[in-house]
Length: 261
Ligand code: NAD
Image (cartoon, rainbow, N blue to C red; front, side, top):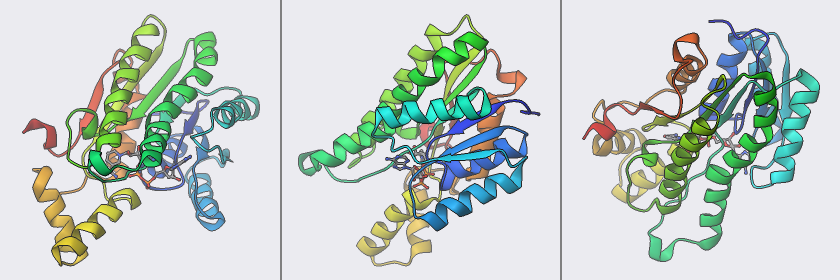
């Protein structure tokens, strides 16, 4: 597979799944725009990792996914510097666990804003260029929580169900063009976002981190192993491959059997 000549923008790519996707796109020849929060050292390390994987054509943009104007400016920077945005991965996301009755209102707004509304704003910003060039691949990183619920994750589950709806509508509106819009639904992936939940379980049940991780998997994921960021990066690359060119509006579920139960 070759993505030479293509430009990929991955939101939330200073860490975890997004970083693995950005590195893989660079490896496949794409120019890459990375984005995300973090301290300067972490951002520089992420940028270097993406640069070293490919041609070196990498831009970091600091847009906060809660700020629609910053999102427009990020897309404009990508189009001005690299000529287009051909692949958009809406990946930035956060989590907060708490029952509905006690869920902090500001956490609800932040999760809906970062995990769902930002994907609307980025899609709206990239679509005119994709439509003009008659080429685009939009990949929304949803979750098994776009398909099923879990306790104490109301905002996250609502946002992820929402992003699957947004995926379908954006796909339908562009179905006659060479623009596909799909979601990926991972099960557990061992990134900083999940490490917090492993730590909380370890503290609650008085076990070490590895035992907590094992219990987390045993409760939900029949394969009893984490999906890896690299597997998800290869899933995203597949959605950009010729084999997937007539796949649109669907979800690629990579969850070790979680939603088969
Ligand atoms: P992560 O914490 O490693 O990465 C999240 C990324 O989003 C980071 O780069 C962070 O800086 C960025 N981000 C957070 N808030 C932002 C903001 N306001 N503006 C810009 N960037 C922001 O987490 P991850 O596990 O790699 O998560 C990536 C995506 O995968 C998320 O959408 C998450 O919901 C989804 N997901 C994760 C899992 C899992 O088990 N880890 C499972 C299913 C889906």
